[in-house]
Length: 238
Image (cartoon, rainbow, N blue to C red; front, side):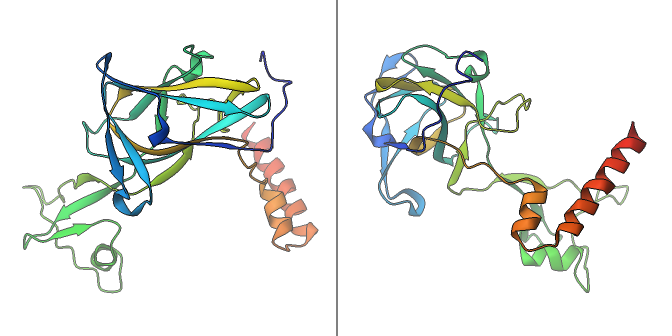
């Protein structure tokens, strides 16, 4: 609320993770692992440990409110949420940024009766479950129920903005930076993470459903009727 009326610059500032100025493990100075062209991503990336701190210097060209986006690669850890605290000039700017989460993607791994492995995002899984000729080949318990699959981390690069982890806000968190040099710190709370870059920028505002329909060429009567239908449903619920 303190900076609600501040400008939202259109420019962006990208911070390569390899340009860090301070790194700690367990509150002691350390040297992180640097990966080059990691998992197909060109350039250097930095492995930040579960109990680490990584700090960058950023030269902000224009005062205002910025969103933070991160390019990262989730790595094997303790299967917990990826949590980080974000500090600007050694201070947590507001309570929502004491702990923010970065998502990772999972898939189910089934072991078939013949011992083969089938993943839930594969064509083979579709064919054996909801295809034209489904063939239930998964192991069952003594009651005939199919056993629960194992959750497996999907290793792939991700891009995401920093959000309020409580879910109270559907838009990315905003951070105020005055013009000039600042320290930006990511402190690990849970789980290791490979980081490629962090960017200060204004997040693209997604269109409303009506705006999207109009942009796709739907007639105005369509989305107007849609809005009326929605209001009628809301009235019935109330």
